[in-house]
Length: 110
Image (spheres, helix red, strand yellow):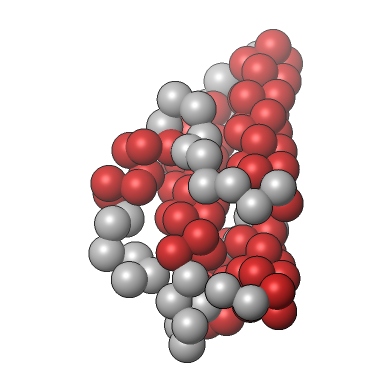
């Protein structure tokens, strides 16, 4: 993999963590060359966003500031972890649920 390909791969991997539009943009950026690094981060970010929306919807039924803050901190840390691993060029799963996302979305991006 040449240096231009690495930069494009990192860029697409980082973009994938910026909301669902980022996942879609990164998916199409990766559609031609099929970088395994980018596919890994697309699966991680898609799983995080879907989990975020489902748990966020359920969390909305509770009128508790502590639950809301805990929710935001938990997902904030997971998203930052994913972004920083993408920036550093590593394919490390997000703690707790990253390996599950890799299995669940195994066919995505291959």
